[in-house]
Image (cartoon, rainbow, N blue to C red; front, side, top):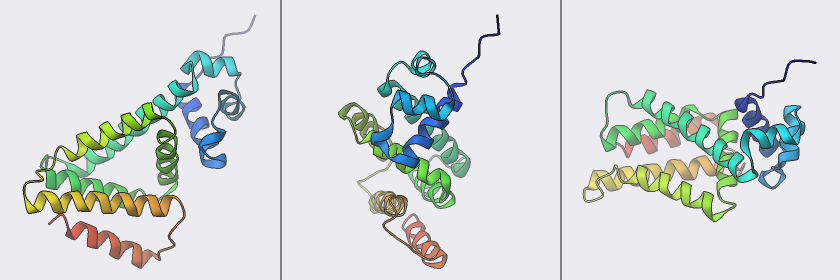
Length: 178
């Protein structure tokens, strides 16, 4: 009798992200992930249970990864200013394959009310760090909204800015954080 194969949850999550990037959020199924990961449907189900639980795990991993990026950019500056500057800088540095992963995650989250609630909570928590009674706090909010807009436009392939235009956009957005 052979040794029982151990399923690596991160490899299954990688496979799920590959399915979504390649074929869109509607293609995400236990079977599609199993095929991509080279395991059985039962292996995916034993690791995550349901498609919704798989999406939750994908979001949790994405959220932890992004929070780590923010912490690295923010350093010791825990102010609203430091938070937003870290946010803008993290998104600017992340204009790569990871950005496609992030866009795919947002599209997945928009599919069900339960996942939209989770995303709204994340944004509500983020915006709660800003003092919107001050001009600076309101500028910081605009900077976050601007970076989110730029992120979505680029992630969905709706813009084709040159590198210079892209860098100028980020400079303009970072200027809002001063």
